[in-house]
Length: 320
Image 1 (cartoon, one colour):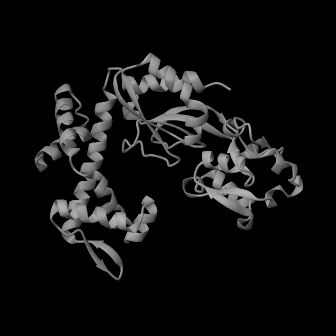
Image 2 (cartoon, one colour):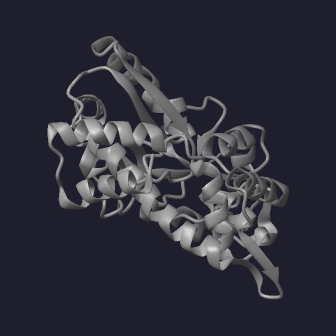
Image 3 (tube, rainbow, N blue to C red):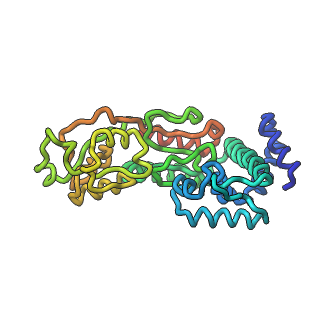
């Protein structure tokens, strides 16, 4: 693809010229642009933004060696040097800075094209990328995914199970089913139901708990993606770090640890109540109640398969 073709594609998007002929061109453009290794570019951009490999590695949740390897591959593909390393850290070379700025615009254009093309798909077939958490997948979604498959056998759901919030603007996923108090303003969707939380442990452990000192008991805490949430902030405010005996990055792991008798765990009630090995402590935490949302990007609301999936799960989950 030449630079002029990319600029024409950018112009079509910005001008809103999404005619049938332009759609054909944009499909072709997107297919060609897919061959660019945008994943390696993501590592380059993170180092450029953070100024160091170590900071980029922390943000991307990978090790330093992985970041360096990705940068080397990107430089090898382009046959040029991307960074100058000095006392201030990693700085883009003048030539690379112009190229990276252009690449950012092209990358954003690619995501816009992909969303707008997908938003005009009228057939109930093809792939649909859905993200949710492991706890919802384990406890709630399985039967409803099965009935959706029965209704729409030609739609293939690619399920991305993670506690991290994937970026629907970048089409990391088409639809998200996740708990949140306030969804991103750039997304559209519906609050399906409330998600309540409780404190859980084994009956044997609960029998030894002093209710007046519950927050000084032995607790299983949060790490990584769960720590940077309202639940994590509540936990840090209530529980002294000296009382944390273990940390987990998912509610499923928390549940398993609590079932083993390791300590008290803060769990969504739909997961904790499901366990035959746990009991809920009679210490209510209503302030932690949040909403379960189904969300998508506005560009995708007219997609037949996105609309079918959203409507199915609204009907399935929008109940007490």
